[in-house]
Length: 227
Ligand code: CA
Image 1 (cartoon, helix red, strand yellow):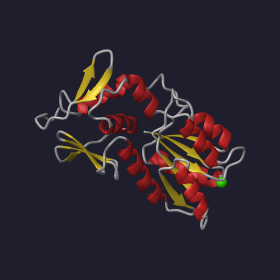
Image 2 (cartoon, helix red, strand yellow; image 1 turned 135 degrees about the horizontal axis):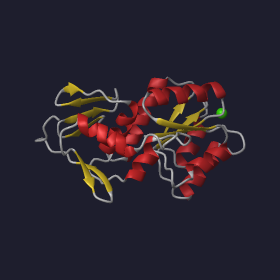
Image 3 (cartoon, helix red, strand yellow; image 1 turned 120 degrees about the vertical axis):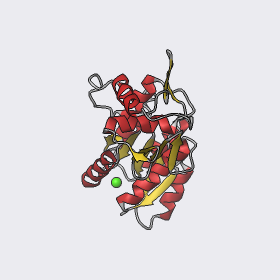
């Protein structure tokens, strides 16, 4: 999952980027409203969620959000507001925010709200995603196969996490690329096919189906056996 962090306070921005990266997200950051608008408006590199501070230089967060929504950008947006500024929350939600947090906040709460936003945007209400014998706990980032913990690298996890969130759909290779890498990541040496091949070795035969010329699809049958 790919997340955009928009925050002009350098220390807080760095904390957010670190915490989100450690939680397994591909993270891009913007430090003013103009850059934020530009990044979030790029249809070819969609974000799965945005964390948006409202008090920003060059263009304020409410304006950024209104512009995105007016252009049809529908990704979940969690806004960060100043304490005791209730009218800012109202304006933010009216502008199209999906949730808000008041500064200062606990990072754990931000991560929990973010997980919920991403789950709901892909149509899942539960924190545990299940596909046949496979269970991904979005809270802990743990993956269990038939009751046993599965060890995955961070990129293997990102690929599987995205497929699990879209488990009834065909996911194209370019979709995966857009959602598992941050913008400035060297993608050439880490192709999606490599991660899919590694995942297949760890997962039941047939769980990741190749839809020829289209992409990949998870086949969620309880009958699938361990590899
Ligand atoms: Ca600010």
